[in-house]
Image 1: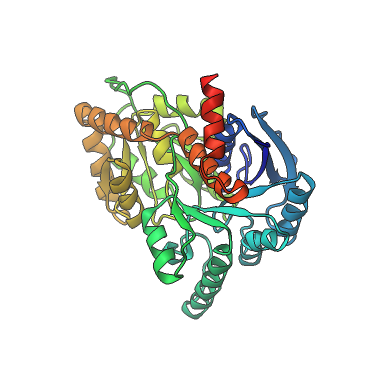
Image 2: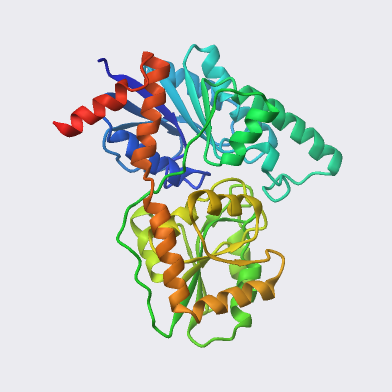
Amino acid sequence: MREVTVAVVTALSPSDTTLAEYGLHLLSALGGKSGVRIVALVEDESITYPAIDGVTIRRTWRFNTLSSPFRVARAAREVGADIVIINAHFTSFGSSKVTAALGLLTPIVLKFAGIPVITLMHNIVETVDLTAAGFRASRPVERVLRAIGTTLTWLVLRSNLVTTTMPRYVEILRSKYRADNVALTPHGAFDSPPPPVIDFDDDKVVMTFGKFGTYKKVEMLIQAVRSLERPGLSLVIAGTDSPNTPGYLEAVEHNLGGDDVRFIGYVPESEVENVFRQATLTVFPYSATTGSSGVLHQAGAFGCPPILPRLGDLEDLIKDEGYTGAFFDPDDVDDLARAIERLLDDPAERLRIASANHRAAAGLSLNEVADWYLIHIGSIVLGDSLALLSGNAEARHN
């Protein structure tokens, strides 16, 4: 059986572009498979990318530029791609309305170039709070934006296969667009570390992790933690600004920073586990969601119990994938403070939540998700859905 060349269009850590961490772990999983040659088509920026076993990294496209779809198509032809996987979010290719929208034309440009496409959509316009996601607009303009989003979704659905990580998204795409080329792809766990161990020390650390400034903001969390007035309690804010809100964390640190609140910035992949392990719990200070949460999967894998807002997509994820946590009203700082205090004072509950989430995170790895992709790649490229997967099984056996 001939080797199949798979090009993967994605942001890649340490880029601060959306889905960069997921891109790193997806590539790592695909790079370990036999029978495929993996080429990562990543941002053409002055970034030092990590070496990934089995993956060739090619700098191809640029965030917030109009030419990205055509640069991707040209690169895919040059590397001899048999198929392209696009790891996409509505803001993957730009923070402005125009560049974000044009970036989502990449699947149709590839199809016109004669290259099969699998598009992984981490969110869809029907479930996105546009204002929260950084696209503020009047009500009439929002209606226009949603109409454009619907058109873009229809174009994305010209892919050979569209996958999402949320069952509700699959249902919407199948019912609204009458799409029969949509499938559910579980998010997959990045790591499979040992079970959680709960720390009983008096000093406690509340942590939050992400890209902040749009629908993820930390002011209310800072207020909630300080309102508890607990000696030894500190807050760690890990991560960077959202591309849509540059300078947000710097402004918050200037106005609200202190000895009890540490802003640690970008966390290299090698340090992510340590950040979660050192935290007593992690808070998700979201006012909206735009798809499945990679941070929730990491918190589960590393045994850090979460405190979550009562929001639709997160509740769906918890129900569908077996996660749990403490909950709060996203508009009520006192409710958040109460949720934090209850969990700080109940180590048995922290252990119960951490153990349940660790089991959920370990239930399906990205390595297994990569096998799922091999099945569909084999079907699309070779006409045999099990060809590549069988090749990998044989390689592992030998």
